[in-house]
Length: 183
Image (cartoon, rainbow, N blue to C red; front, side, top):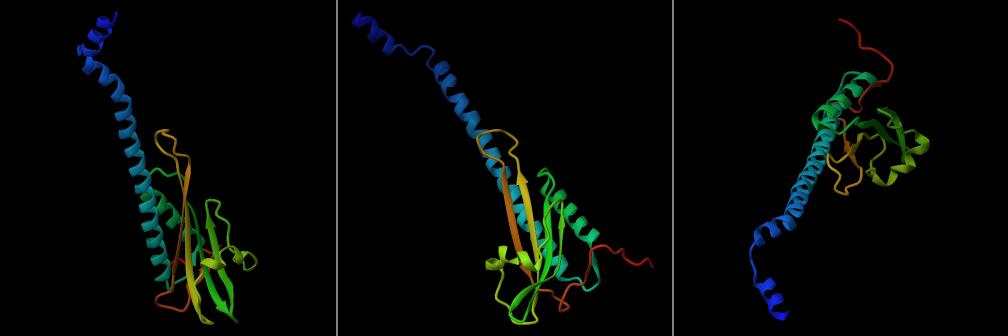
């Protein structure tokens, strides 16, 4: 009996097939996992860059900005990110008046809630210290990421918070309901 066990242990026939059966699921899981990881990083990185792009575009506006302009910018972000679902976006202009933050305007797209003076406390700790009369443009995007394969990664939401100063004017003029004049 002992001799039969020793022969079984020394026998190397079919070792390659046995190792293949053991390692193939691990290699497939590692390959799919790396794909999901890098896809999530791509969506996160692209969403950050797209948020900076929209913030920079808004900061350069000297003409009236309309609600449909911000909706169009959210559509551009959605196209740039590719496959992340509807991107929620909120653009706001916040000023400092008598040492208090005051919301000049705020506009949300795809269900993003607007900011008002009475709920600015939710983000007060993230706002910069500003002198009286100063204004900032705040662009926030909320991107939901659903992994293409189920490897245990739950649905993730990437929140981007970008603040810029208006570049060419003291403020960015905004009209949520208006339409631009036809020329």
